[in-house]
Length: 507
Image (cartoon, rainbow, N blue to C red):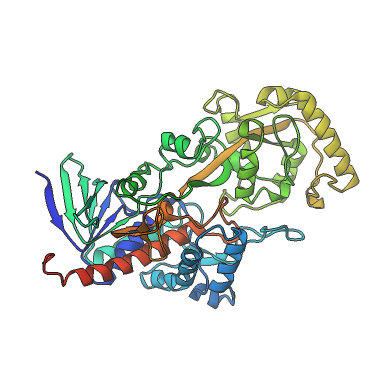
């Protein structure tokens, strides 16, 4: 017989959105049980650096005047009004106060910054706003990947102080529905394989999409993991919440991924990947350039571009002269994410990987050669096409102007001094976005836009606000949406459970 538990609010998963929901619901006076598949909290947020916000204390202290209304308008223009304006508005107008809410928990923010700044005449959507609230790691180190782990720790501590009961290694499996069609609990399975049944008037699903489920990605999005997609596959993100919500009638929304670009198994080849994120020579397998290379730091745009190349693969190439320049003067474009000593450590990892680094189809991911023709043969570019296009590019470099794409003049460095270095660039993504229809209270709705009583969905399963592309102009957006959607749902679920507690049937 299943173990029977009872509370006011069940939160399914303890990633960033689930933690925000758990804390907010508990602050609203609800008795909260949070189910988590893993043995710890934080989920994919532990890989990140910080959330987006507008009108925060951090921004005000730095005299940065970015208002929620400004972000709302910019976001809606970016998406061409193809997304729910009330949901977008609810998120941005909550975001500044959420930073204060986190500070009250002991979270310290190192700075607020854009993801990057354009070097030139501001191409459309090129400039990032100062919205990215980068978390200060508790050890005092310079922020980088995983800086946000400190934030999830503080949130977990706050939840525990408020009496939230975490059931680890106990994933939610099924939503319970009463005779009136309202969600009234969750079935879960603990680490011993025993069933746990939790009754409650409100359930918040926060399971983070299906970025680790290659079968669902192919079915819903049409990309093949390990062939033309090398996204982050955070363990546990298997589509549990997505499927649970749809099983009880949740409405459907388009599912996308936060497109970017990266090498296969990039975390184990971080120096190599970072070294190629420069405005060198980028081309498709025919040897043709496909964008101005000084745009490569908008990873969303590059991922989108690669998605439309032959074979869905691009190539980045530099020569020994460029490498010497970066070693002496530093990179042309500085990354917030990759190590600061990229080129000091480059050759050691390059030599280690040169003969052993393959993609899932057995193709060389990186290659080195003394001539461009030999390089093309090794890595899969048409040799004649590459030679022809590089010759044209080098002529443009000599003339000091990119007549094809108007790449920034200072980055027009010819590709002419062997040895030459190349890598394959594939589509990557942080995870899946969307699939479950919600309103601005984070209540789940049917395809007919009728609210399913007692059910909320937050985080990436409910993140339908980007249209076809992640909004790089407002950095920190996914973490920001996760935090604020979770907090909104937690507050509303606590209010619902408080109203429900007066019902004699529940008592």
